[in-house]
Amino acid sequence: MIYTAHYTSPLGGITLASDGIALTGLYFDGETGCPPCDAAHKKDLPVFGEVVKWLDLYFAGKEPDFMPTLNPTGTSFQMSVWAILRAIPFGETTTYGAIAKQLEKDTGRRMSAQAVGGAVGRNPISILIPCHRVIGANGSLTGYAGGLDKKEYLLELEGII
Image (cartoon, rainbow, N blue to C red; front, top):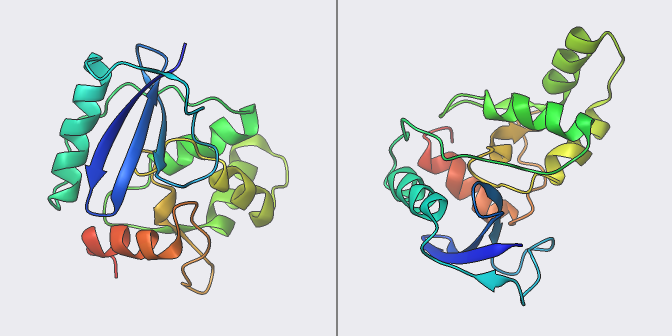
């Protein structure tokens, strides 16, 4: 069963999704891929309280010193990319190409920046799995499911731009 809760951020509404134990999704209102609107609502799940605390700290410009339990669902390739995203430090960025090179080094298999971009774009837990910290090779702000204005805001919040 999917449970959802709503969070009001400086960027607008955010829907949180959970399997009852861990966070499985974080979506900006209007973003595609959000859980079904008829999902069960249960706002008092402990994980939602942890995520709200994390987001409150984050949107106050602070780096949270804890991480709620996350359980994103994806292919093994996507999970590998998302693991790398989780390792990008607060206030830093990387590129799609750098992630591809890291995956190639780890697996011995050639990877393309485009394939990495596809996996980054399918990240179901925005902000906590910080896909906003991935930029183009030339430093450009490339796609973000919530919109480039939100990506820019998050990077400014972290003091990156």
